[in-house]
Image (cartoon, rainbow, N blue to C red; front, side):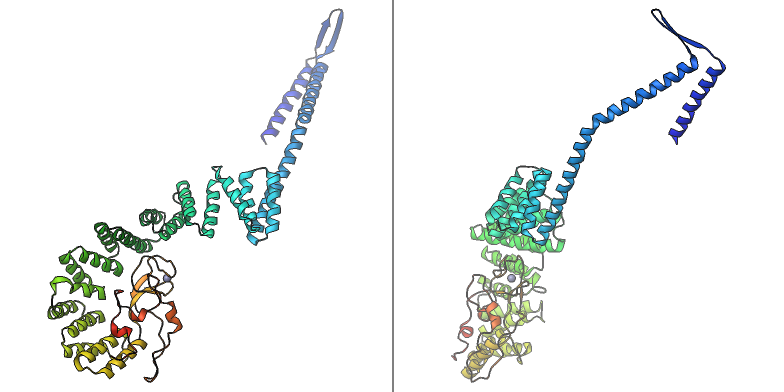
Length: 482
Ligand SMILES: [Zn+2]
């Protein structure tokens, strides 16, 4: 529109000029030496216009001719680049489809056409991996480390290679370098965290976990659960190195992180007991018994010099029972104390209250002790012990991920290597069904094979004491009357 207006205005000016010249005729004289030329003004004006137009057209032709080689070159380069990107895309598709030969062919083509190593190195590495050439892939990944724009991708490739090879030390190194390049990337933080946990680097894992929670790689509740497990791992590590003060401090932190976390409570109580902090220990057990009772806590509550005789232990455990009167752990702890104090009637009453129709293993063992102590009835003892072997298993530290049972709590499940998955509960699986009395003890069921001990001993869950201590003679010799 603007161009049209400019054209109309210019044409108007020229036409007006020509009309004016026609109405006001004149002559233009050009003289050079003896030569003299007289030209009408209109003709001179028209000639000038023709001359200007000719010069403009010639200049335009010259300018276009000069650009032709460059345009041809640009066109060729653009076509090459387009074919290069197409090869790159097809190579990526081939990698996704698992077509090793096509991926390799397209990688070479893209490399030739694009001439841009950072762009094609990842495809070349992936194509090499698809062809099973891990050495070549490693060389590409290492080459990528030399360029800032591809270093992170190279580290990721090398990290995955190291993990696949089971080289945790190298994987940790690559993950640490990847974190220094991209400190907020969730997969970097979770991978580094997993490696640190697997290597038992609890302090490093704790730091990485906090960063991962900030980067929202873990939900807050999941983060708290993992944090408690790592703090307990740190506590175990400190105790093993002889630093019991630090061990107790880590257990305190784990308990604060999750106030109803039974592993933290039990560990804290055990360390308090070892440190001689008996007043704090008794207060802790009284505080938690209403929501987190455990046989180890009951044992610690009446251990040491503050419950020197059986009768005192009974009185103390009666008081503890009153804090959580309906929980079986309250009664079981009290029954054991009553049997030790030879108060047979009360012990029997409590056991009957717990239910004797289909009692779990530990109730059967207590009944056997009672029958032996009160009546010396060895037939009854034998029958209870046989029933104990077939009864529902005792609670243990059960992995919520794989179902493996452990006698002692540990940060990692020794069966599946998951962190913080061990909970105190009765295993969900059932043992071999009860058999007639005349038969020998039940054959170990297939499910028993999955029971593992934290120190990799043979499965013996039904023989384990709740705190992982040695089983009672009654349990061990359950097929032999005493
Ligand atoms: Zn497990």
